[in-house]
Length: 308
Image 1: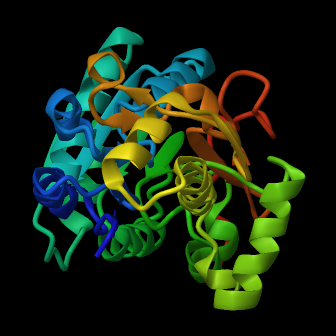
Image 2: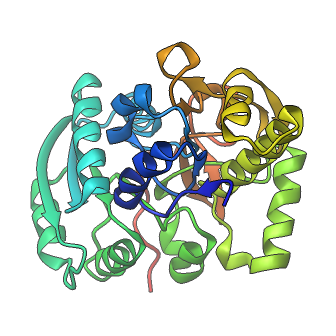
């Protein structure tokens, strides 16, 4: 075995990365955040984290969007694992920095089967923003319950799952102007548009991931070029190429910020990403980040759900 592609999820990624590094095997971390790994990257030179996540740079951007929109209060629900803990802590910090008061929080187990108590508590708080930091099954359960209870805050952000086409397929017009983590879409670039077509042809429309797919695909394009430039399968030599090179990919020009002056593990800089926050508008996951990568202006407040 020459190389590793990382496991899905923040918690297993945190466990796998130091093992790969111990055996000097490059690990391309795909579907998982790495907030808790960041401080360790100094000593993990073979670890290259791909995805954007809570403090890298999603919650800072979301809080900026919400402050500009005029939001004043937030309620946070989060899953009881490393993913939920990271997003809760980062969101609370960023909201405070952007003059938004967190008026309530609720944690819940991975196996939660009833979201009604959490939603009713959030409704009683009358918070402008509701943050749902969980995994797809939790987020589907939440969204269905929120619609049934007619809970429609001024801003609603939903974590993993909301960035997939299947989420739009399930909830249709009820998803209008709901925020999700991400983001990219067909407008990002001709190469991004082409990738969307390839994914639909191979896996079906419902499996289009408007958060990570473009980043994962581009990281492998980068990796291929690094191997070719190194001219070897030696992990150490390829790792040195990866830490010092820039290559064109479907994402655009791509490179890594590596810890310890280039001697540690790598993160993608913010400039490499197509977007941080998406919002469903007329069936499209629009990029609503401030700046020139925005594909649509954010909508706030979110309208009520359509009449059944």
